[in-house]
Length: 115
Image 1 (cartoon, rainbow, N blue to C red):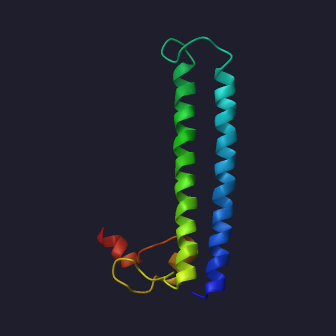
Image 2: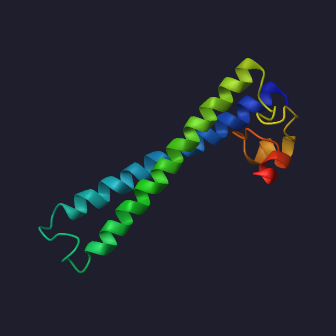
């Protein structure tokens, strides 16, 4: 894949992941603010388990988005070093369609299947 195209794909994916992360952080703030108005604890509050579930779900999704941003940053470093699009396991080229679908891909599809 052309390095300029790779940088564009990675930048677009990173922008989307960063936007998703910011949205999730805002959702988390709303959940926390809403639960601050009650003195009930999650265990004894009929709505408590729902609040706890929502909070845990948003935290999990935010961690996934943070991981994605880190992976995309690492992909940008691989572009800069000239190793982008090379499988970290076998050294073969990662197919362009895979990189287009997953710009941070580190392994070719054959090596992923072996996992």
